[in-house]
Image 1 (spheres, helix red, strand yellow):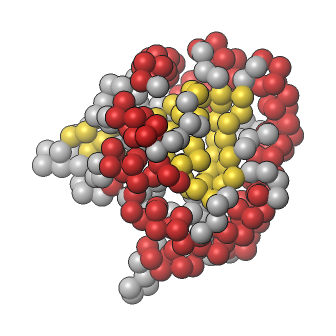
Image 2: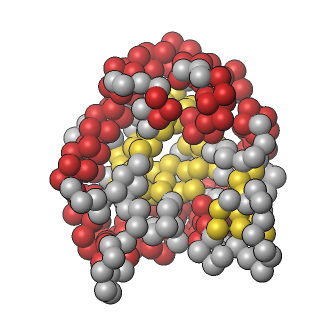
Length: 283
């Protein structure tokens, strides 16, 4: 496996310094990562022309010897105007192509419809053809698409697997986030083992966990499906069994990119660099 980092990890630094993506590329290279994953290029007001910026970033990363490994975007395929949303996501595929990213991750839904008996399986039936349309569009450009175990609906491993099997397209797979399984109170090692055969890309992320039997805890801003509390932390400092998860990926034959995602309360540059050194020790 080779190590990359998602630009989301630098969120605090970007907000504090108002730097641009080129500075983030420099920091990524200086820290010792081999690759970088870009997230929603228009985040933080960084650009009003994603295609133009993508082309510039591709040239810059090639110049400094940094590989662009993935592009990550939000999406909601249960939007009121679903045709417009599909068109927007295809536009994101165009940005991924301009970046030279071989993989693009997109969300699928934010919440279920407020209808009687409308379940995640109802959503799968509705969105699977749309996901297939998007991945076929991406396939023509040499890009694979995937969905992360992320959000309030498709977080549990069994649900994501069911979605991928319903789409049934070899160009569509899983962005396996080993930390996010805790949001569904799922065992990370078992979950990664389920995800590994479908994995196109992997996030290494870590959390501190407190039982929901405690009163609300300041600083533990995430609440799991079962009512427990999570707080992001440095990879290797929390309760995600990262080494065992990496071993499960290796056992399944995964040899792609492992992208560090940091969203802890610690200083982000410290968190990223410290997490990188830990990941070097486990891959």
